[in-house]
Every structure is written in C-alpha cells, then in structure tokens.
Amino acid sequence: MDNLIGNTIIRLQETESTNNYANNQVQTNDYPEGTVFLAYSQTAGRGQINNKWESEPGKNLTFSILFYPDFLEIRDQFMLSKVVSLGIRRTLAQYIDDVSIKWPNDIYAGNRKICGILIENSILYGQIKNSIAGIGLNVNQEIFRSNAPNPVSLSILTKKQFDLDALLAQLLDGIDHYYKLLCSGNNKAINQEFESHLFRIGKIYSFNDETGPFDGTILGVNDIGQLLIRKESGEIRAYHFKEVEYINTPLNFKRQ
Image 1 (cartoon, rainbow, N blue to C red):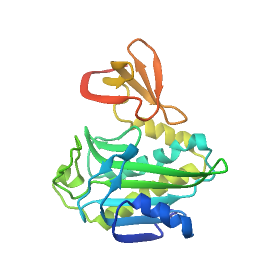
Image 2: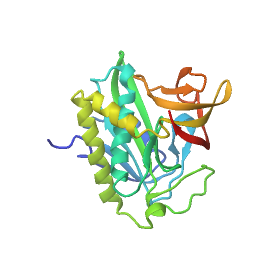
Image 3: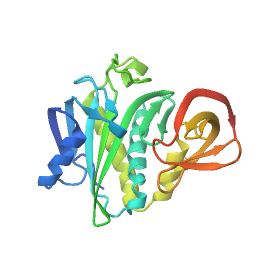
Image 4: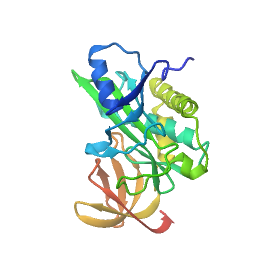
C-alpha cells in the first residue's frame, strides 16, 4: 500500500511556526491527508502551553503533518499522539539507544529531550475535522542557548551529521506505518507498543502534584490519554497534562 504520509511536502524557507502556517493554510486550501509543511527556519516554534522550541536554522527538522482522522472519536484523540510518537521513536532507535516516549508528547534519549510534538485538533459538530501534528527534532544542532533544561541532538549523541531529507523520509515512513494501524482499528497493538516504550514506566520515581512531592510508579496511560501513577500509599491517580511533573532525581529503580 502506498504511503499516506509525505506524498505532498510544502517547503518553507522561514515561518514562525509550521503548525500556525498549516492551520492558516487549511482554512482556505484543500490539501490531501498526509501533507507535510516543512520549514528550514522556524522563528517561533511552539510547544505545549506556550512553551517555545529552539531550533537553529538548517540544522534540525521542524515540520507539521496534516491528518483527517474523522474515524476517531474525540475521546480517542490521544491515539494520534501515540502514532506520531511511535513512528519517531522507531526511526531514532535505528541510530541511538534508550529512546523512550515521555508522556504526553516528548521523545527522550536517556534523560534528555531530543524531540517535541504538538498536536492540535480542529473539532466541528462533535467530530475531529482535522489534526495538525507539529514535530521538532534536534538533528545536527550542537549548541543550545535557550534555558531548556536537557536538550540533546542526534549529532551530539552519535558524533555524526545527518542528511535531513533522508531522515525526514524515514520519519514519515515510520509515522505512516503506525497511522495505517490506527486507520485499520489496530488500537490494541498501538497501545501495547506505546506503553512498552513509555519513559520511566514500572519503576519508582519522584513526582510533584497539587498535594506536593510524592514517590510513585507509572503504570501506563488510560483511554483518554491521562497518565496513571500508583502512589506508595497504593492510590492510583489519573493525571491530565500539567497536573503532575517529573522530579528528575530517580530513587531506587525498583520494579513494582
């Protein structure tokens, strides 16, 4: 079966945000599903909740993908995040070790962030009209000047430079693979693989929520994308984004 993702690529020399550009374009133009909006330079890349994404021009991959997942119920929209995360993780695992998916939307190499994902859904009449998945992957950048706490790139980790077009093709193939699984209703396989690569799953770590610091174990993610953590008291809590934060100091790494 031919790929759904990446048959049309719109290349931009510069834009503030590929997600913003894509959102504006789909208001007035009819683009096929899987269209990619790629920027050589992104001057105001966005993360979740107004976070900024640093990217040196010409060094990294900053792009957005247009989806029309109208077969997804709104409550299942986090499945698209799983699809994109798994496609990226699988590609990066060909080059580096210890690649995991940090809930809700980052890809980590060890304890350092190598990729961020921002998915924005347009809802119309109680249905997903379209989704735009913005991806920022650190590839050849070697110096990071922002106050981001733990960025890393493929180049830093491998001591090599990467062909951006070739790497983009691999990423789109990976995302395409998992999106086809989603389109065919193979949610169970996606869920199982997603949780198997979830950052810090199954070990005791420190977290912080509205009650203060606590120790707990990540159990997985529920159907609507909430992170499930079992506290040491035995209580299992389900958290939306920004309701819990990771504390970086690991404890005893004991399996539960």
